[in-house]
Length: 365
Image (cartoon, rainbow, N blue to C red; front, side):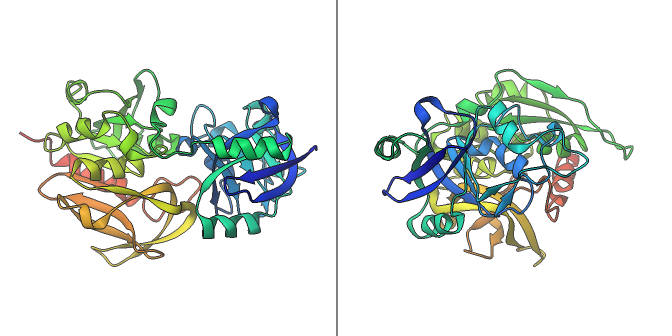
């Protein structure tokens, strides 16, 4: 492995070794964030919500159980790069069909191993997520690339990850009840969400630019707003589309879909210092008092003081940020975290049944 380095936008330097694909000119740039999951690295890397970002894994040993196509969350990774402390030299799992490092190379994703990820994580926690550049290029070139990297603020990253054509998924419902019809807006939709929706409905996933009229023409029992990358205020047309759907059909949103629903209800969003990225965030359900351990992946958040058209249903116990909301006098709700969570936790999967019950009440007159 060739010597390489990461240079952050503030000039901080971290040394390591190049892994994965060889980028053009020996440079990969993006917004550097960290994720605290212990397992599920493949699901993280293939989550479209990481478009534009370089993922740092805080767990020191990554790749030990290999990869399998069954765990892909999208058609390909959209992240810019991967940083680890140690890449496993061999895989050990009966489901594995390949090695993580080989997968990164095949998918054109550059990586950096041997990095002091504890120091890097602490630096991001103190200074905030910021642009960076890594690779085998001279440090001066990496520094210039880091300074030139625009990051994710104000960029419509959804346009880079959404599908270009609608896609149908048959239901897998087995409880004897008639399946519902759900239209899902693809802002960067994960495969595990589709699997959970199929358990209750026939699902048609449509491009993010699909209009409210086109959605309603499909006569859905409910509309789902998916996860996705970046700044919710930069997603062209999404808030207007959702506004036109509210009061006409039940709506359920996750992650970016939650933020976009909040905006449609009159709320505002802001960027967190270093985001929430991990599989162990405690969230309190305000209706039941129960604490759910949740999977999270977002840099932006809903401002609680701005949601006049909704009530808050869930709160993050680490920093008290908004984790869920429900529209007043509307059959619409959303959560900031990921109840589908592959490989887990699964504390919040009841929300799909809640969406099913909401649709059982029928569409609006």
